[in-house]
Length: 142
Image (cartoon, rainbow, N blue to C red):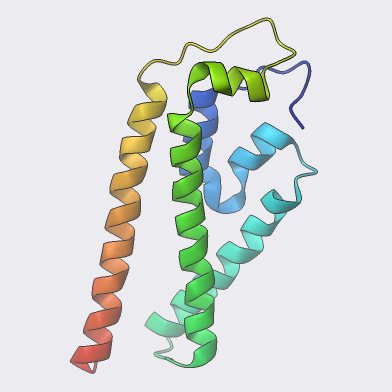
């Protein structure tokens, strides 16, 4: 539920989603510390990182490893999508949802759009690199 007294800036929310989305920073900024979905981000991050460790360092390629990697990939995808949604929301729609009780209105300009562009580059680059690594390990045998 949006706070009645605190203005929620769309640029700040998009930047937090990009930089701290894996630990739920943007969700805590928008919804507060009682957000259940925000608290699910850190365990999902740890599970995904454990899957990466099992795959890369320990060289394991079992069902558990792939499940953990799936959790990590789902988190990355969710964070990129959340960054896109936040960054591409119109100021009027943003204010209607998050700043209805505030007198201050959003006027973000290009800031959130640049965050979205960077999120797309990093998200696509990360997923492409991970896919190339997995395919090389699978078909290259090493």
